Image 1: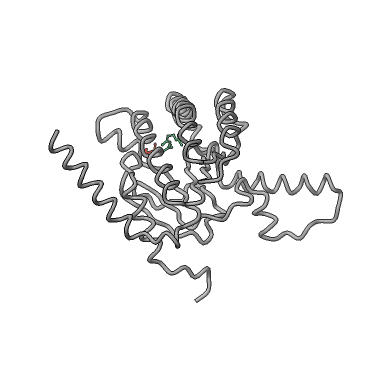
Image 2 (image 1 turned 180 degrees about the horizontal axis):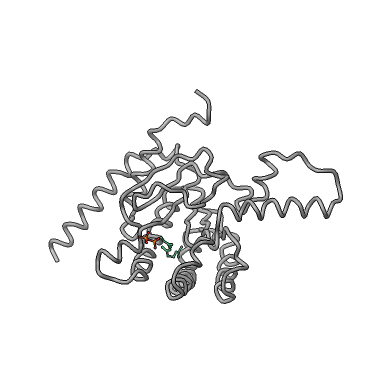
Length: 256
Ligand code: FPP
């Protein structure tokens, strides 16, 4: 017991120390995370892949609360991609039920922390029960003005662009007007993230150097930070390290 307390104290000390290196005036406004490595985390422990997803929920909880406390404006987590339907049916259904449990259990915490929930992706393609739970949480947190927490669900960067072009096409059909200028603003305003600033910082766990069809339009100028840490082990410490690394960089947006 004594040793556990000691380790815990050391972890807290390290977190506090990292926190003191973060400049609150220069926070990334929008942080996006590709949560990867749940399966490997489980396999390394001789557990089932779904146990890795279950353990990943703790990391979700901690990161959402830490981002809200810090004063980050937007946090986007990649929870389920359009490609993830190809996984074994029991893994897909466990992910859906974990999501439902998380939403039901965490809505009061989101409210207490003034966190507004939002969904990026083809929500209509999710099971009806998941959609109902999500709708309830979206309505309940609609008025919140603190952190905007986007969960990317049934999300694909390419499908998002297809959906945006379809919306633009529809607007043209409806107005029977002349074509508006096709520019960055028109496209950005028709993405799932319409009205939100692009991610300043994109974090990926488990060491993979891939974008996995995530926010393809929005990450054009995002700073990338990749950690070997597997998602279930991701904690405040890693979030703070990513922000500190981001704050040391010079962003040039194509300039010099
Ligand atoms: C990638 O790990 C992770 C996922 C596909 C799902 C992430 C979902 C959660 C953490 C739980 C639900 C989320 C919320 C927001 C409540 P992987 O399975 O691809 O890992 P591997 O690459 O090691 O196999």
